Length: 259
Image (cartoon, rainbow, N blue to C red; front, side):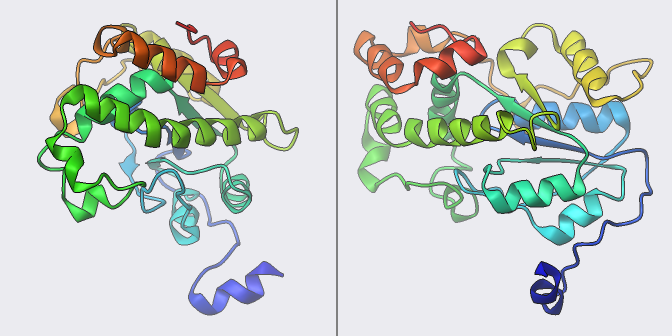
């Protein structure tokens, strides 16, 4: 029934014929969770091509059906911040046998996000800055770094929490729980190759002779962020504020320390 409405716009729901260098890989990630490093490492290790399957917005990002159909042909890796809305889940389950959900402690993600917004190629650039909400007001850029953290706690942390909780509903659903491979930034830091071995096993992929790690540089938005760097960067009040915002069940589920 849906195809009757979307085919006039050039979309088709039929699965594309498989081809290319093996099955494709889709990685759904939180912003600032090592997303590009992970996608680029999968690309190099499995000899895949990068493809974009969504505009890259946050916290609401939608899968493009034509791009997903191309992904399903094989030979590609895609990284996106897709939200777990019903239409995305329908599209993902149609075109992907499994996909990766990559998470990070919201406090660490928040700190990296605040640093990210300091970059001159991000701050004030419409092609990047307008991909997220809410948009920082002009006064934000004259704030101290600690004040910027306060602003992001008020405005960005709620988006992160809602995004994670919505994905948790999908994880708890009998329809999707066996199709989502959960990985975490905390499990990747300091053990890149072992982490990739485990991820490839979960994907059902043959382990290659070597893991081709991506370069850790600014092209991957890399910043040497320790797992608990936020402890030193946040004030005691900020630590307490964020701890109160993150639901206890998320802390327990993903092994994130309460304080």
